[in-house]
Length: 497
Image 1 (cartoon, rainbow, N blue to C red):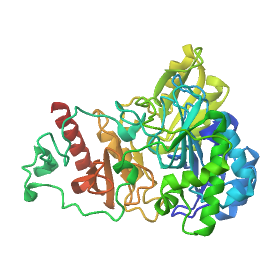
Image 2: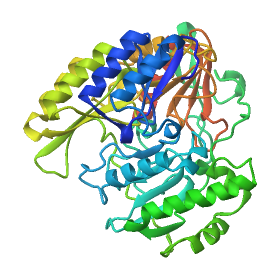
Image 3: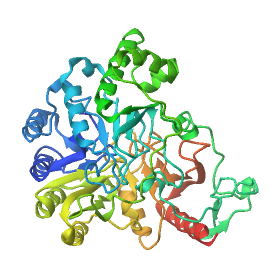
Image 4: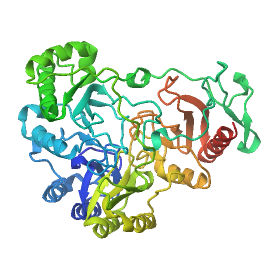
């Protein structure tokens, strides 16, 4: 339980992002009974219940535990941070079914007392080579299946490297939205930076500004206190490859070594801290004597590029008679009524299986192929978004000032307004954050609105090399209406370029 402006938050960790219809109904009931009725989907494919009264915490936890949503042992709750891709076990492109390995690893983490000392943020990614894959979440340890499914490449404090010809996501963070021409604030082929849009009288975009500082809408950009993560700035590389049957042993031996070193150096609580203290080659040298198998060189290994928006719409599974259907939950929030409706749809679709995704969307697997379109229509009918062109399919917003003391604006209300203003356009994915901490999005979105005060935001366009963690400032202190006009004009400029 974590305190917040609107009451306590109960974080519900799901095993591999999966939920049954019975569990979904319990979540809806306790959100109604003990909370304020807000159920949030997180970017780690988990759930959050908001507005919990502290006096009800024990009753809430008991109900969730009885529904199978708690840890195997109380001390093991924090370390249940094993991520798989949403289509693990069913993806047409998968090389290795990671679900059995993930379940075994989750049991090991929870039932081994030594591992309870790991940081609650210590995370492990198991990537089976799926086309629907999140490969931009930094994990302390990641394993990614090779194409033949017989081995895993691995790395530390980073993400799996991805082959060229990739937008590096099947979700909204990296959605392409125009031809390969220079974006505002980025250098074109001639080495000159593109300049921002300006607003004319009445707040209408007037096209490209002249490029002179006094003619730009944006203010001077200041260097951030938190620079872009190293994995964005530097090329990613796998550190080695091990046979698939040795994946579990590799991870447990790595954890044992990590805990041994961190006991000597208390400041080391994550793999990124260990890498700052010693190079990866030294870590591997200390690891090898512990292993009963060899680590092969990874060379230039890269995983195949994921498919864009594979979490939305209907898609065939590797089990040819089945398909899955996916749709985004608007701004990552469900009501108890929504959750009950989803449970009923899942019951009719596949007996009650529900999967959550890192894009704050829902996926229903194992639908008889001929029924998938109808199931998707039912998801659409309760307000979910399955069209990549729908702003709500790719818009992210934190809880905002109604739920968080750090937030300077109502990002949820403003996000809903912005989505309506962008409704008839092919708008780029947008992230609204109530403060600079950017809790709702691990990576910079193509466009980010950072709250400055109620109803006003700074608008940034992503640029991986800075000058801020969100990219380059396009417009400062704009209203939601002004932001919508700028985003529409930007999209049009990119389309016409």
